Image (tube, rainbow, N blue to C red; front, side):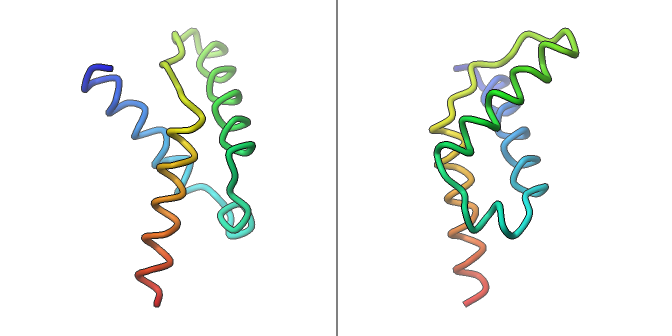
Length: 75
């Protein structure tokens, strides 16, 4: 994956994270990541954009890391 694609996907992951509710953060799972990726692909297609090579596990792992970092900062 080239840097431009990686950066574009990371921007989406960050945007998803910042728009998650407390309940969504508390219950974040791989299944939810799969739904997010599916929704993103649909949204890309609706806008006439070729979907990126989204990986639900990357979404899950990255957002899980953000959650853990935020929890550590609150301690």
